Image (cartoon, rainbow, N blue to C red; front, side, top):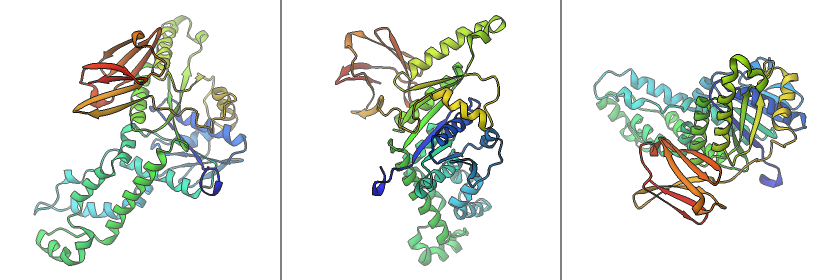
Length: 393
């Protein structure tokens, strides 16, 4: 429940590698929920917009009514970026035109990768605060690295300090002298307003996205090895930054009958992929969709696909919420703690394969993609304590 006893809007983000059918799954989910009588907005923040194609409707930066209870929009990243920090960008352009004479180097003005995506995600916060819908479904491509920006507003502070040669409070007193001496233009108050706006929005968006009762991330993958690896990396990063991944949807599974003859080798490859998905996302709910005979687009088709994937499950609920593993640093060493509440110490077998941990418990195998900081490090010890396997690197 939100304030005043009103139920808070649910936010469901679908993410996945390009080409896995993420947009179609998001659209089908929205149709299913709207058909159950809830007011749904589907929003695409992915710069390669295809949400409008799914509905066979032209979409823009404002919500369009697709059907009863169902609305859709595609974020204009350039517009959202200008809205968020237009004045600061203008000021940076002025600085870039300076030649020498103590001017700030171009390298110091480079913006973190993923910032445009981040600005488009501010729209999530804006829609949530308005509270006009029951469910917001977001078709996005935020990698763990993009979302990690929300974890460190101070990183943005460091960038701003390099860009702005003077503090707001010193602007009136020292500004003219600095401008004359250094031959660089001074920022005006609107630039500082942009900075404060950005910092506040980042912190508010982070707080919202980390609210596991409101926000769920759902990863879409296919049973192909290269796609599964990307999904696993994404899951590890999101989980370690404490974002709640509550489902994995496996799309485009080929029926065995379609793989006979020329494509028969693909059957075993697909089965290996499905087994790896089971081992890598063992605790998270998984849903499966076979390759369809026609494109997943237009309302009549989308309406049926949601039920094919999820059946009678209420997908507006939080489907999973548990801390599977975490990273701890103490006494100069890094520990990966994996929750294994019912495991027997004598039944555990642990090995490392490059950037992946493989843990066997009895006849079950579980795989964990290590965070990038541990890729080059080897295990130096492990112990089982209080339901957690603690692995030291």
